Image (spheres, chains in turn red, cyan):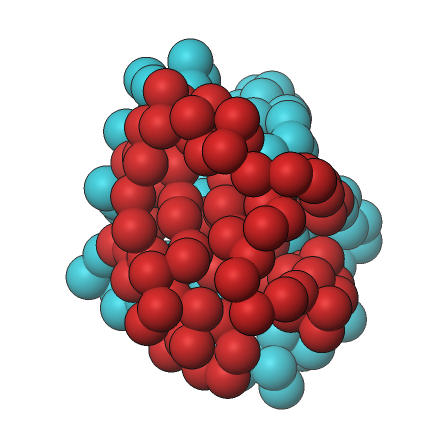
Length: 96
Length: 118
């Protein structure tokens, strides 16, 4: 199972869209930095991302959500849990 | 006196544009110019009141924005469609910003001597 990390806003960059085009059924998605904007309703309730969220495979980093004042539809993780996820998955692909 | 428009199109923390724009705005305000500020696209995310940026070791951009009024910068605008695309309401913003349509933004832009983009 791969882990995909996205750190760009879905409104300004194609990183999330391109990731969603190739992500596999059991893969996990982690939204960090400006990527956490995808965790809020306008993006998170649509299409493939909504499906990944419903199946509990999408996470957003707590520090980045709090900084930006975003209410997430995804699961929320702290930095330690992010590190744990990274140790549990292989390969890890960054989208930026 | 020149008409200067500051255009903010970037989200607040991923890059340093938001902070640099604010620094430039406050500096420009000392020169007695006719200054307007527009938040469009992802720039509207700068305005969200509920920011807690301590965890990523940065300052809340939104907490600094009320300073604009103290520097007599009162022509503050926000792209209405950018707010609605991001499911944001005026009540969630840290400062009063006048929502503008694309037609109004185009008129605002035409009317300037200089435009500074961030």
